[in-house]
Length: 283
Image (tube, rainbow, N blue to C red; front, top):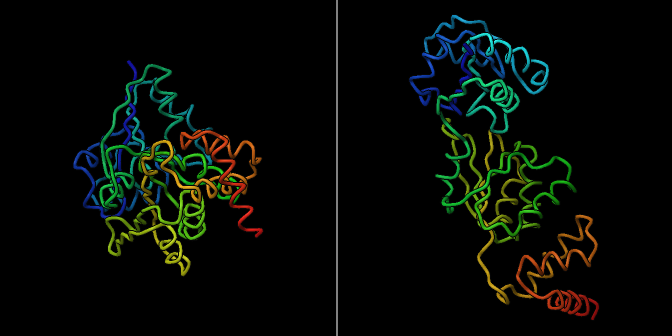
């Protein structure tokens, strides 16, 4: 008889947000795989729980090596509880490899639903939540980051990102370049904690605000691209989109073709807009 893998959501800030079932799972699991065993110790103390099972570390640095060990424990019939520092495992945190290994071995996988920075930020952002896409952390290198943002510039779904505070200003600036300076967005900081803050506004305005430095855990929510039909995108916006793609290393011909496809326009119309803008600048 195989065991069970339990993915448990942990508080993203306020420990009182911990679901009641989490305490029971922590007390009864045969194995607790924790992203940070010190944080786990603080959590169990706050919840008044004394784990009966063994505790092992399971983080980015040892995830690949430790997954077979935990999969063997599951295959042997043990109940393995997976927790990360905050929120749900596998969401920009360790967990995917172990879930995949458990599924491959026919092991039951279940979850203790808990707090989520993604859903909390979406709800607080004031932006549409009927359709959204979680993009995780943007690439750290400027060129790669801009290229990745450019790929989703035309996506009409609300976009959600995690970001480190020391990279926030650069990322918001890149978003303003890729999505447009006036694209509505929200920066959600220290969610559920004492200094929780939600700053809403156009991307360019948020980038200027973040330039002075921002602290804490950050989630960024960006409105999707506005719905437009053929002929509804003005020439200046077409030129801007082509320029963004060119700055990311794309050749002008390919950039024009991609922008035309996004906007539902003939390539010739986008080409003419680019040429006209160039002539105006030179004149």
